[in-house]
Length: 316
Image 1 (cartoon, helix red, strand yellow):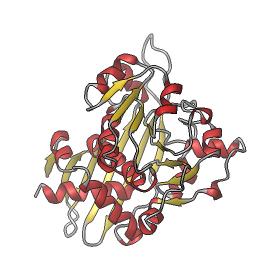
Image 2 (image 1 turned 60 degrees about the vertical axis):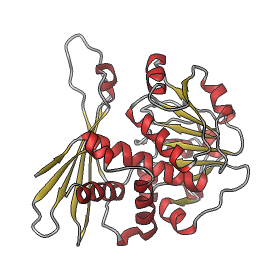
Image 3 (image 1 turned 90 degrees about the horizontal axis):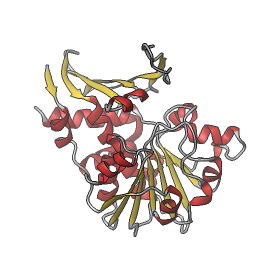
Image 4 (image 1 turned 30 degrees about the horizontal axis):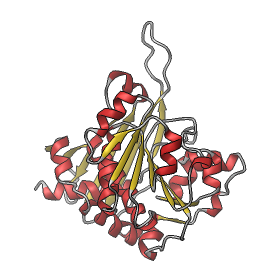
């Protein structure tokens, strides 16, 4: 079995090639691969002596397959308490099976693949939905995904010349800013929301961080972090005033915390989702002038399938 480490995985998944590959896959839809909804389990956090109780972990199992390309399975542990250990919250591996024999032929660093394909999906949506002359990008969150989101968004909007980084921990925000060209850490999230053309959120928050009252017309919102119904990064007011798009309808209806909570509060009707990535990739959607567009992703196995095939084929 070939083992592809994180740095190699990153090199084999460059932007914009990965974004283009996802665009082609979403345009073709189910003909590319079978990608059922992921399996989702809550796993209790271990009880440690003299330590406060922590939020449950999440185990995700994401399979996909095609007759001529074998099987891809991603296994993910999402561990919110890892931030206190200075470790990534997402711990993952991706297995690729040979199309003929079914033998597991390749093991790919799942955390790197997940970060790259997640950022690429957001950038794909931004290709259709973000202002074409976007100049300022705001990243809300300081995990490893924040750097990938900045690079991916800048690859589809070269006009972005300023990147703002906000996090609950200012030191982490400063460290992330040092990794990104033209980036600076900021402390006033409300002010930054008013300045940004694109706002990309990648947190594990269960309370609204970005408020509708702070966001001005002609802004694109990218929501990556709230992958469970009990999590959210925005308030219902922002969802209500936005044109809403999703990665997949199944994922949105099952797991998109921002949308589901806004619907429960009476701010949004899930039937009013404008389109998913399949429809966007087919229609080459034109962005409504002065609109606030909101893209909510929770992740889809087809993204892992496309990225894993790119890695496995390039590594041969």
